[in-house]
Length: 127
Image (cartoon, rainbow, N blue to C red; front, side, top):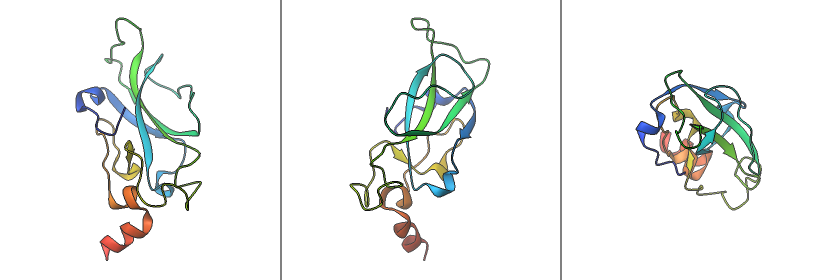
């Protein structure tokens, strides 16, 4: 799912758990995954690596058909800017990329100059 999440999808979030320091990342990709539990580190079955996830409150209900909970997972792929700074995302960013510094429980996060164009753009716009 893209960075354009519905706030209603996030209403039961209680925490964002980071597996890596978000200050070191220009952007993270976010996806709304169907997971077996409300809390705890979910299984990760994508390329790349999971860098964070959300946890849900006890009132969050599982999907009646699948029995799974919708939770956000934050991740990076092998060709993302953090591992390939001169690669395809040297400038620009994937559609689902958001600045991890803008993430909070129940808030989708935002695109910023840093997330979309890299740290040099963030420095240029703050001068």
